[in-house]
Amino acid sequence: ENLSTKWDFAKLAAESGFSTTTFRRRWAEAIGVPPAKYLQQLRIAEACRLLVETPMQIKAVALATGFEDEFYFSRRFRIEVGKAPREYRKTYMLRR
Image (cartoon, rainbow, N blue to C red; front, side):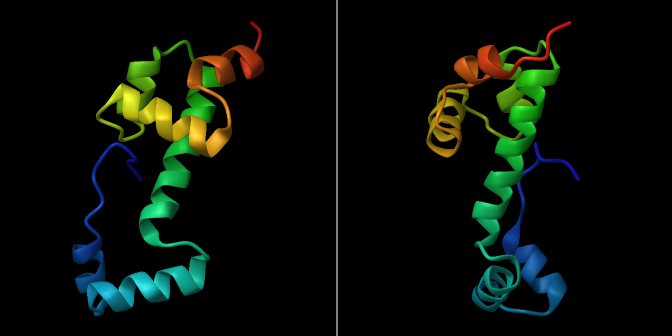
């Protein structure tokens, strides 16, 4: 629901009735990636959307998608997407 909040995988595991290890393993089997990687993919996808659909500053996009550090966000974004956030925005920004 809210990508800016920290997910507590131990709590999710307990609510599901699994140990943390079993929860992570079962999640990866069902979804195809571990829960932390899945969350990161969701956050990056939302960041992509915000970058092209809004005029939000890069720092605000980082915070809105759960990254507390703009520079860490930029590094992770470049690794996942292949472009820096600013470059991604220039390439795909919706023209108004």
